[in-house]
Length: 378
Image (cartoon, rainbow, N blue to C red; front, top):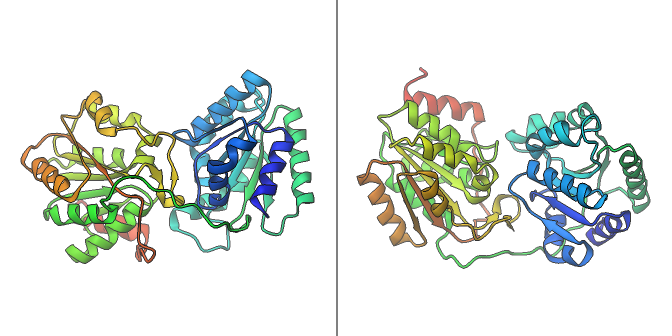
């Protein structure tokens, strides 16, 4: 399906506001919205997480009486369940909206481990929330899509939500858009520097996406294994809380959290919690490329936010930033010398290797290896 046709059908259906979090399955759609959405729709907003997108859709309906469109990866349904069930549901406020959900982990299709279970339960989860849906594929015709939107209109008439569950390769590939920022330090180079800096007793917790993939490769290359690293391959935005508690319970070890700006933005309140009760053995690193790079490179909703300034206000004992190899090496040296809860923002380019690998071991293997390294599992 041509993305222009899909977008124009949404406009003709009466959608004026579109909001959501970028997803690789929806990359063609997201790219189109970044470039052409302003010409078709009154408003396009990329908020901090999917629940917030639902909140925007609720605000749109209250302000205009018109349903909004919310897009997300199906893993993002986890963030959206609360406002969908406790606010938008017909038994509460009854707020109609159209959900566009990228279907990762579809049964029978090869995908990453973090998508498998959510992929299996996505249709059931929608049904459990009382959200009718249609599955859209590369074979879906415009006439069939019109029928799906007609069904959505009927759901709206009952103050309900409706979902379009989008399979991979539904939209025709476009030339693609290469987003960029002004920074020259590559993220994998930064991770290489950080991995070199690690000591044998240090522990690392990395966020989902390419940061964990790059840490995996650099650890194996430089350290001979990744036993010091817990790769948080799913649950975007929660790696820092995992690292925080590990730091609290493993006081004799330095714990480094490798976070991303998109992940950090998604659950930013965690920084306030860390700052309120700082662990002096925690080094929280935000690798900031101003984009959701792991799912296609689309900009975040707040690309110019300087996280190190927020960290200072939140109560981190030491905050700093780096945008070059020399500056990063110096800040890591300072972090080693000063045992205080540290936040380090590293501004990196929007580039990654085309041949970047993925972990060969299972998530369970990673957990066991990490816990054995700590000494809490034999």
